[in-house]
Image (cartoon, rainbow, N blue to C red; front, side):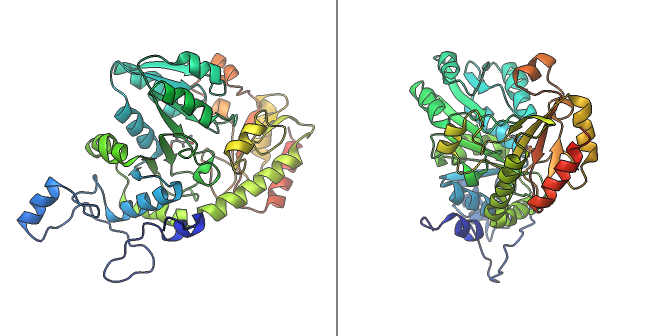
Length: 392
Ligand SMILES: *Cc1c(COP(=O)(O)O)cnc(C)c1O
């Protein structure tokens, strides 16, 4: 299996077949497991074997198939699946940090990630420094003797800024800190954060892994000593377990993820190119465009620019709202990575909790809209965007 290529791993890795030899992976919809003898029960509670289970909060065969499949894709030693992306972020940070430690995080974080870093961690005695993630000097300057974690998302949401994973990892590791990357926007297909130097990688499986808007889920990947050690200890006792049914949806999502994400990124690039210079737009942000401020870094650490484009509509909120309302195929929602193309106005929805000063600092203007490109025909999407932009 180690030399299988991505698509083969995504279809076959981690499969566990029952005595019936089912072709499609089974859903083991059970919270508990029965032991043939009291001795077996005692032995399992004493030391759990590799493919043994005692309770679904600790593990389940369908969940294990999902964990093993995504671990194979990422070439990670181990993975722990969670009920949502936020359970994964929360688990990773709380398992790595304790009172008296310090975390350095990029300012441009998903709203709930920012809440954990800014509001929750300080309540438990963790010191926090937020930096401009694109500035390596800022990371370097923020390091302290008690810095234990550097945490960031790359690509960032919604301005699609890129953090230099190799650069931050060098700074963090010199100071003895771990690098935790939320790799959702880049996807595991286009960016291998672990091989670039991250110690822990997190996904909201709700996004591209499901890819069809059905279930919440998440996963944390990294070294076995961490995943099956402190992370598992934290998550199994605090209850963020992924349900077997949702694990099955994610497992089947992985089978088609490479095909889906590549098709979505191809459409995103062609749309970004077609819209660049449009007279109703102040900016087209897409990491695959040569005009992206960090195009060289994108080329170094990503295989493609991803599935999200951000557009700055000239004139602010009113014309931006008119464009959203005029779109016919592209739906107003806040998921991303979905088969259906989606548009979001971050300043009034996903980022409405931020102050005006924070929004300005992050470059999230009133005219900014975020497009998650789906699996529809790119010509239809371009026609929809062009007709809607007329009302801007
Ligand atoms: C969606 C998202 C999350 C949270 O994931 P949920 O599955 O909604 O809990 C975390 N980080 C990023 C970058 C996301 O896009």
